[in-house]
Amino acid sequence: MSKAHAFQLAYTIKPIKRIHEPQADTARAHMRKHMGWEFVDGLQTTLLGEIELASGTQEEKRREAGKMVRKQIKDAFKALDVDHLVTFTGSLMVSNLKDAIELEIP
Image (cartoon, rainbow, N blue to C red; front, top):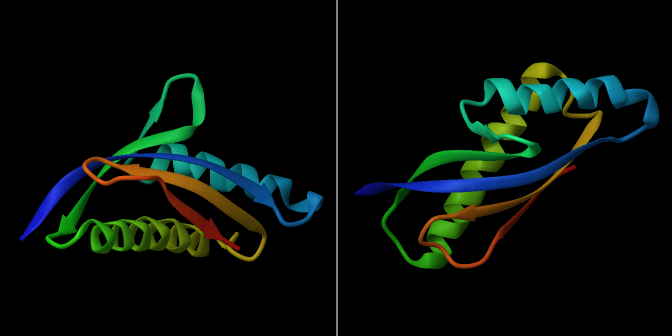
C-alpha cells in the first residue's frame, strides 16, 4: 500500500559549458513552472511537492523517493533536449524519512 509523503527539493542547475547558460535557464524555468511542484517565494531553487511511496523500510523508501524524483527531472530534461547540456545537483527531504537524499544528474 502506498502513502503520500510531502517533500522539499533544494537544487541547482548548471550549464556544462558557459555557452549553454540559456539552456540551463530553460531547465530552471521548467522546474519552477511545469513540474507540478510549488516553489517557495523568494527561493527560486526550492520546490515543494508530494510523492507516493510504497510501504517498506526507511532505506527502501529513501531509494524509491530518490529514484522517482530523479526520473521525473531526467525525463523533463530529455523532453527539453537539455539533458546533455546541464547538470543537476539537489537535496531531497521527504516527510517521515530521515536524512536528506542527494540527487545528481550529470
